[in-house]
Amino acid sequence: MSICLAASLVFLKYLANADSEAPNKPYVSASSEGGIYAKCTSKEILGELGKTQVYKMSEKGEELLCSFDWFPSGGIYLIDNFNNGGNFYSIVRIGPWPAGNNPDNQLSIAFYNDCKEIKRYSTADIV
Image 1: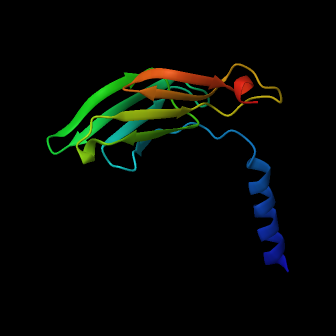
Image 2: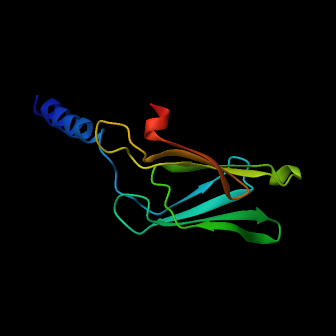
């Protein structure tokens, strides 16, 4: 019986933390096609201060495509067609965990084409 109680307490602790913002950690994200990747480092525990560098991979090695002065705390998704002979790449940046109960002008999602932002939406835009 004590094993069931201990397992239940661990599970309840996990559920209590499931709806809270996780601290930022450096990470690398690659496109599913394998032609580009991003190195993301944060300057703070929570939030978007940091640096993101996007690299192109080829048989010659890696080439820096662009660098941003933000950390994609909600995640980053990369799309490219370099390995199929193309020259197209896009970036989708997810904003940080929304704070509070009301939508505001905090970044929710942003879209980039060739490292230029083409469209962004705030949490208020999405709701």
